[in-house]
Figure (spheres, rainbow, N blue to C red):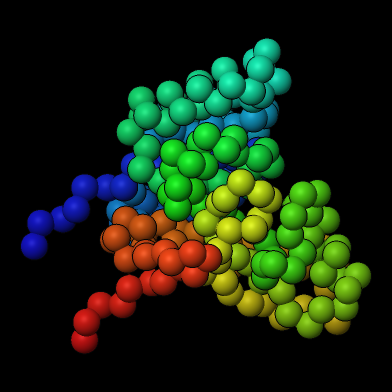
Length: 214
Ligand code: GRF
């Protein structure tokens, strides 16, 4: 059987970029048949942009703040994705909302990683440490990570993969975040591989993973 050509992806980051690194490593180790066509960040100082540059990946700083209006920004963003022949957009710790026109153009082809079990502890303002603090404050016994399809709102699209971790009695925001991050680094590359294999089908909010025939 001939090997499929690698899935061309864009990775959007706002912070450290450890999820970007996990994608990069999965590709390097041969576990993920994808190519990072470009890394985009709304923050010029994002660690993820530095990582991309150090590894010869096209890295672009683009933010709505650089433009007079949203329409021009959206057009630029779409052009970047088109020019790099992006097939799947991966939001990996990206804190800006994706413009509606981009969501529509890439319908069901944008995924996001969220550090909780959605729909709990998601939505505008719930990101990073705030999520884990909210989980602890609520007294939850489990939390986890969700990879979901991106729609026009924050964290509302249908989940593709969710995985749980326990919340321990002596957990702090930091210990919980690091346990969840470990899961994120597993399920994000895994989800991208499912897209690369054409194994994802979507009906409304429900995302199905097509299993191989026995
Ligand atoms: C991760 O917890 C991700 O789920 C969240 O922001 C954090 C980013 O981590 N959205 P990194 O930048 O990939 O290290």
